[in-house]
Length: 320
Image 1 (cartoon, rainbow, N blue to C red):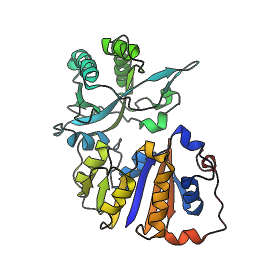
Image 2 (image 1 turned 180 degrees about the horizontal axis):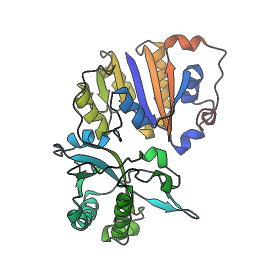
Image 3 (image 1 turned 135 degrees about the horizontal axis):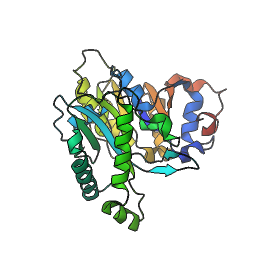
């Protein structure tokens, strides 16, 4: 089985020592870097073109209990913008976790305000936030990974209607400021939702006849479930453990697996991968490790373990 793991680097991952299982795997791998966020790389590999955005929202919404029809969809992640000395930055995590009750209350306020503008905020079954429009907004958006921790002024909507959409976002921030749901979040020690981050805009694309190179997807992200259906690929829910997943998927020829970021910090995860490669249950392992606006791509085959001269390095040597 060929196994492709999609995962997101986190702060603690940067400080992993050279003795970690992940560092050992990377020491034997062929390393390259794609100057694309992970979501963009996944879209490119599945023949989804940015026109001008990758149509992530529509593909996800179609599997999230929403009728996408021919409308234009955007993800509207609930986020916290952090005030820096002279700018605002997009803070992690993105999106924030928001209870259904609070999400519905915020969306009610937003929809009442923006109804006359034709904007409609929707909540998916997964808890994801979306914004739907009758027609294209004539803007290009930035994936959140590109803006994380940076001055958001450089990542605001671009295009013919950019000024209108920046104005909309300013209105969103005013509506959320002091919202009763945010007051409750503060009392409970949660970060307030003070804006939304728009990305992944587009109408539902037509299915592609081009082969994607995978015969099975597994993950807990609604976009992966939607992408599997759009690509005509089998989707399976995440197993309780990576070891169980490898056993259950062993008859598949090529699997794309979304690895939860919590799992990345468990060294047992990489011991399972090492064992799978050494026993040749995994004939090839590809790790797509997201690092904000770029993605580290590590390709490893069982024969690579014979490269004894390659020494392990701390993760900081790979993630910059």
